[in-house]
Length: 77
Image 1 (cartoon, rainbow, N blue to C red):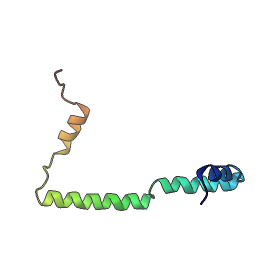
Image 2: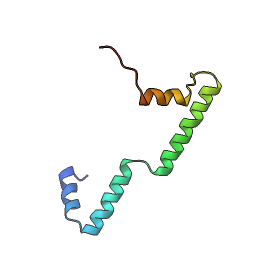
Image 3: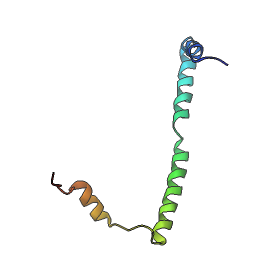
Image 4: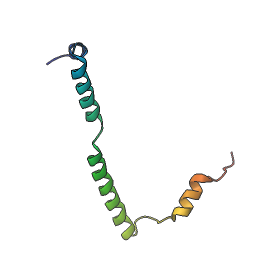
């Protein structure tokens, strides 16, 4: 197995075009693709719909949510 320093040294010695491809692949591996993100959001949305239908969550009107975001209550210290 290659140790970290040896791997870094090998990567630094690569030609720029290969370094660029390596960087792209490493960055891609750090975060899921858009398709994966979309699939995760779809599952989350389905889970939330079930919670609403089953009455497990309190529904809050959008107007109230935005009022609280834009005009948060002033709290005494």
